[in-house]
Image (cartoon, rainbow, N blue to C red; front, side, top):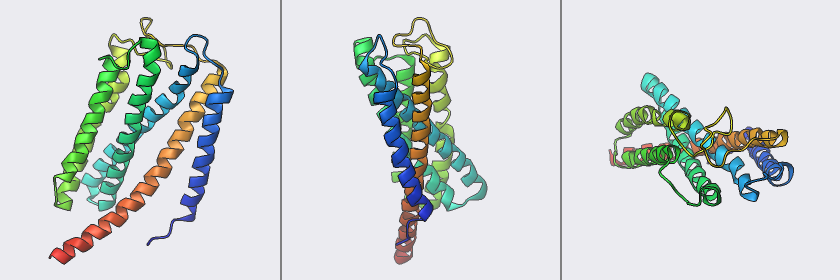
Amino acid sequence: MIPKPRLLIGLDFVTAFLFVVAVVMVFFYAPLEAVMGQVQRVFYFHVSTAWVGMLGFLVAAIAGIVYLTKGEEKWDIVGVAAIEISLVFFFVAIISGSIWARPIWNTWWTWDPRLTTAAIVELIYAAYMMLRQGIEDPDRRARFGAVYAILGFLSVPLTFISIRLLRTIHPVVVGGGNPTAAGGFDMSSKMLQTFFFSLFAFSVLFIDLLWHRIRLGTLAHKVEQLRMKDID
């Protein structure tokens, strides 16, 4: 068993500390939004988990490019790790968005451009995992996965800009907004501080989880190599 690096152990503690601080800031430091009330606090987790999801998909696309360039197995492991983590976080973002939307839009789900494109992104990367499960040859699986991760990432910026290009009821909280959007609000200085700290804390959490998942993927790859040798 490969011992856990001390730096990773330290990162685990830092991540836990930052996450606790972020939760405290969300519930006790950030002021209560006048119109939406307590449900607005979901916003900090909703945006942070969506950010982590998009960040992981970007990492997977970059890892795919590097793998196709160098052919090194470690980059395939990085890509898989990033997508697995991002799938979970992006799903949490969709669920938390529904919780936030229910009292504001009076519905759990509507086929708004942002919600629709987000659902498509989740399905695209779920299909990525299914594709990998259907290919036994490691090299072929890695090549297909790399190409898919690169092409699949094209859906991510589309989701981000959908509320800026199309008519939508989804608010653009940072960087202006659609006057017809429901649920938009102006953030006070404490809200902004909490918002950006949450983004930072979740980014560190992503790095920590990615490191753990890469270690697990490396061990799994070694086991697969040993299994292939036994078959030969």
